[in-house]
Every structure is written in structure tokens, then in C-alpha cells.
Image 1 (cartoon, rainbow, N blue to C red):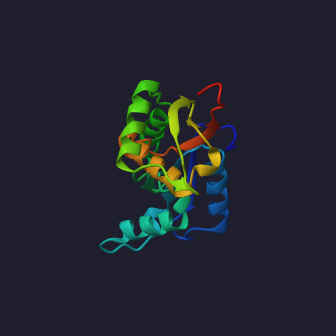
Image 2 (tube, rainbow, N blue to C red; image 1 turned 135 degrees about the horizontal axis):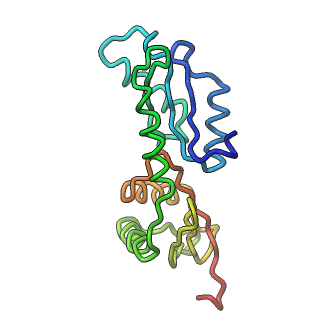
Length: 184
């Protein structure tokens, strides 16, 4: 079902809490690059105090650290409480994941990001990012050498692009391509 979907809804039972199976399904959706929404059902059955919702949200996002881009909704299918928000959020997340950004704008943002924090250097060799293009939900970075891209810098770029373009509920993925000497 995850393979066929455009937006995956990860359903969590508020009474039972977060399970290992929930984590596996969320991990699979993330690996497949699917836009995701986390929905906590049976919220009416949870005893609430001040801050319960935010505490539960924090616990869910801590358990799914790799999916911190996904919005979290709380509802009750039994009472109908906030059920209407799911479709609205699906529409919003789908709009974000299907958004296309012109290459020129992408490269301007990339230049701003690299100006704010220089790419890393390893053994005296510095990563050079020549340009970026978008292909569906993927971003292709043309670089001098893939091995010079450090995970932390890639995460920095992801956060920078998320801050600039939003992409609520959408995993941002980068594919690195080395430019050959002829292409340079």
C-alpha cells in the first residue's frame, strides 16, 4: 500500500501508544520517499492535563526522529473530533511534495546556503557543488567528488531547503552526481 500511495498516513493508537510495527511502517514510507502524515487516533480516550498533546507529539517525534518533517494530527474517529483535518492536511502535504521549483531559484538558494556555511574539506580537498536540479521529489546535486559530501553537510542543506521552501510532510532527498572533466 505504501508503494502505491502518494501521501502515507501513519496511524498511531493514542491508548496503546507507539509500537515497533508503527516504527517499521513509518521507516518503510520514509525509505520510499513518500510524503507522510502522522495521525494519532483515539485522542478522546486519553486522560488529558495541560500540555498532554504537546508531550505526546514530542514522544512521537522522538520515536520517529528520521521523520521530523511529518505533521502530527490528533483526532478521534469514534467522536469525529478533528477528523476533517486529515483530508485538509493530505491536500496541503500533497501540494508541498508535488511542488516544482525552477532550477535558477534552486541554484540561488544553494549559493546562499554554501555562502552561509562552506562545504566541508577532507584531506585538503574541498567539496564543490556546481549546481542543483529537481527531478520529482529528488534533488540532484552535481559535485566534484561524491566522497567529499559529509552526512552533516547534506543534513544542513536539507534543513536549509526545508526552511526556504517548506516541504511540510515531504522527505527531501539528494542524489549526488560527479561531473566528469569533460562536463566541467
